[in-house]
Amino acid sequence: MTDSYFKLESPITFKGEAGDGILSYRHYDPDEVVMGKRMEDHLRFAVCYWHNFVWPGTDPFGGQTFERPWFGDDMAAARHKADVAFEMFSALGVPYFCFHDFDVRPEGASFAESRRNLEEITDYFSKKMEQTGLKLLWGTANLFSHRRFMAGAATNPDPDVVAYSAATVKSCIDATHRLGGENYVLWGGREGYETLLNTRIGQEMDQLGRFLNMVVEYKHRIGFTGTILIEPKPQEPTKHQYDHDVATVYGFLKRYGLEDEVRVNIEQGHAILAGHSFEHELALAYDLGIFGSIDMNRNDYQSGWDTDQFPNDVAEVALAYYQILKGGGFSTGGTNFDAKLRRQSIDPQDLLAAHVGGMDVCARALKAAAAMLEDGTLEAALDERYAGWKSGLGMDILNGTHDLESLAAHVQDTGLKPQPVSGRQEILEAVINRFV
Ligand code: XLS
Ligand code: NI
Ligand code: NI
Image (cartoon, rainbow, N blue to C red; front, top):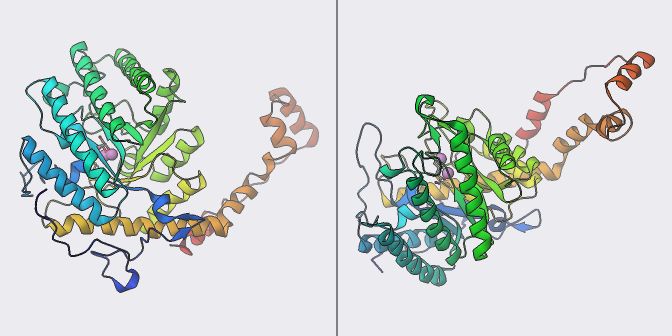
């Protein structure tokens, strides 16, 4: 155990209006009951390892800005990093964390050494989890940083790389299983292409389909009960990624017979990159029965890339939690901050304050969403708009009583003249404003 990095006198707790909202929560009170459930159990916050403890603050034009005492590529540095990570998770009072293999252990000279390093850190985590009560929301493999993955992992044209990727995923599922992880995530950063001049889409999709089936088979073989999640993203780092968005992932899962086995981890910033709103992706995933978890980090709307900022817009986040509450909330999923500091935020306190701010935004948004749902105006407006489908003509269209000919006859015989009805968008938007 290393010395305290954050030098906090006491953990960060809910102080409401009495606190400054920087190193205290003004809105996130884990024990406050919202719609019959504690806020902590609704939100299921997780903090990610990679952006917080690994990312050096680089951008395409500049190098490292963060000087962290745990940066280094040996096991001593990895343990030091784990000490600070668990110090931060505990100080924030979040229930969960998430990691990639690459974040937590040094890369070995061989696959076997990398695996041993991961196992050693997994043991170290296991003790810390016991001491602190922290839980693992999900584990994942980094199949995109090392140069061996430059042309993809499961979709690489070289079967040797696919085999290496499979071995890597196996060791990461083992680590996740050992730590009682509640989900296992696959984000296909390099599962896509730069140009069709060197790519066969159909071949690569078949590889990905088989790969994912192997993951599911292995999960069942070892008795891992967590959910397997795919994280859709349309591009970056590759120009075109196969897991483009929720709808694309669903089509892929159907094609390879996985729609009952695999769900989605939806990231706000990825939804924006795909040209959707976050709530669109959430609502669709619930409707398709594949909603799993969320990465709660926003994109900058001007820059057009994955900036991974902490959330700071209550109204926007409220619409997201509105869909989540309506859909029945999380089961094995949670709210993961896959978010990173801006590269000028170099103080230890910035790391804590970023999460506190993000968690307070989510807490306010959850309460607003619950109030909207309890108020019922929005749902009543939807019920009214779709009322025609509950009986009579609407019901007969849906249940197959009608076909094109019978509908044509119906329209002619009754002299039907459909009457346009207001969509009332501005009125509904004004309703939102009552709650945020
Ligand atoms: C990158 C992804 C990544 C995944 C985990 O854009 O969001 O961080 O969440 O591999
Ligand atoms: Ni993510
Ligand atoms: Ni992302």
